Image (cartoon, rainbow, N blue to C red; front, top):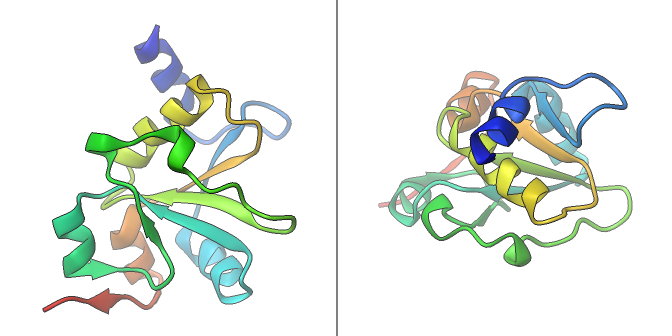
Length: 125
């Protein structure tokens, strides 16, 4: 059942369809610059420490708990990302299975796509 759910969420969805959308990082960067996102990074803690998007909340997939995902306030979108775009699909599936009642946006290409779109990151030591 989970694989069927995950498979249904693996690509972009049609308007009015499922709750999960895959969006290009250039668009997400516009939202981020406008303060319109709650950004969740599902990479592991060491990956996050090495490089992250300013303001992102780290909730690693290996210990991902949908109840820890903050609800976006009005006018903001929930955006989930990982390294290249795969793990955020699994996290999105967990949120849907847990009954998440809002839209979920997956960042196409993860932090790699973000960097390619010129998005800023913080690098650790």
